[in-house]
Length: 149
Image (cartoon, rainbow, N blue to C red; front, side):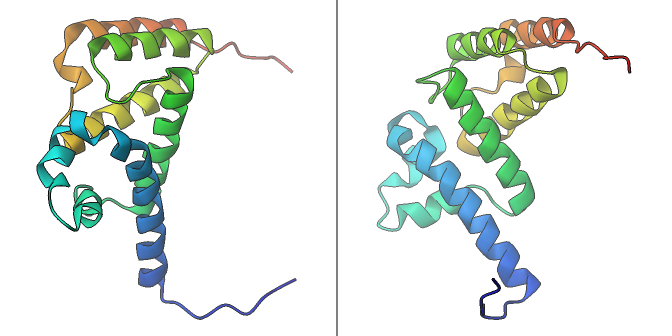
């Protein structure tokens, strides 16, 4: 069944999708605002939710969607992951190895962690050698087997 929807421009549609995915990310992060530097700095404003949205700059809805889904996956594997620190990142990497992540999944999650760290002013995993080396070792061990026909 096709319903009548109001006509929207491509730009409006993209703005709505962008806002949807940012809000979903913010909903995961907002309860932990005291531990997230860039959220702390805007929390005292009356329009702090809008300020949280502005933290994500001009990111496209597609990249925000990917980061949101990766964040939700991280939260599923490592409960209490937000706010992350070196120990929590290592615990997550161990969990991803047990869940048999593919190397691609591991890299996508790592990219999300770097993106959110930069956006939120949190621990950038690339600046700490231990989790970085652990990620490299785990991704190397996550080589998927090929199934022959």
